[in-house]
Image (tube, rainbow, N blue to C red):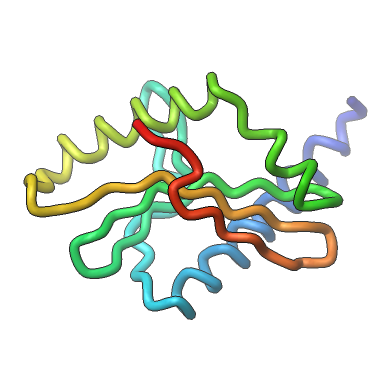
Length: 120
């Protein structure tokens, strides 16, 4: 990878995350965290709607199909483990539901929201 490619990829990814955040807000979610990090990893978006908390991985690629392939099992485990830390740090009790979603963004800025993309 050329040095400037990393910067371009980061910029494109940030654009996808911003679009995903706007999409969730339009669907009635409150964005609680963006790019939340801990020692295990990063969660792109954490959003809330009533008593539902969703942990969202955003992937931007030329096509939505190729974006979905970018979320592997190892990454799912890291996000799941990071989410457990976030839940402990924020003291959400058993009355809350938690879900892992993916939002895929194509180069044409079309989005696909996959609710329950994986389970913990």
